[in-house]
Image (tube, rainbow, N blue to C red; front, side):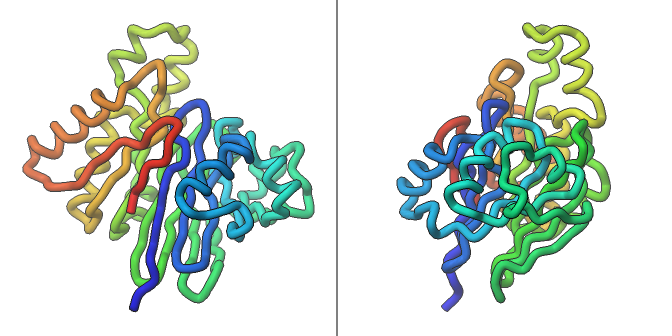
Length: 257
């Protein structure tokens, strides 16, 4: 009998990002952009506990991905895996917990679970996404990237489920409250992925084995769940592509698989 796999976003958006992965008895986090208390409370609602975690994998050093790390490392003494340039920015995190890596690295957490990084184009010291192999199934998290680089598409090819960024709606961004310099930063090739590019990536993934996509990291000011779903689902329908698509909740757990 194969072991059960669960992957949930515990929080997703500009105010905080955290993903929980469970395969059998192996449990870990990708990012900790919310408080230790919030992570603990949410894990308990899903039938787990902080004491069951074996590691944290960090995508990059921006606060909405790491602000819960210092307390998590202090009280749980978890190994924190990060690219070296990211690790150097993790102020407040016990250095004894940090395990620095080259941009492309792989960690086997158990005989059944492996986590592999891939580089994402984002304006941070370093930025990566992760492919998770759980038994004979593959899943991935790909957020914080300004474009759908071919290297990212190659890494995601064949993943059964993908947590994929759909950060902003172009019209909302350009007509919203952000100053022009910030709009340009977000829309840059090292910024964030807009709904249209997310739709194109979702279509590509569906044609290469992906069965479910969870749209994530939506901007509170420049996007809405309805707009993200409308853009992605509309593009898929227009091209006659079938794919299960959902949107990650900003502050409540949402299940990928």
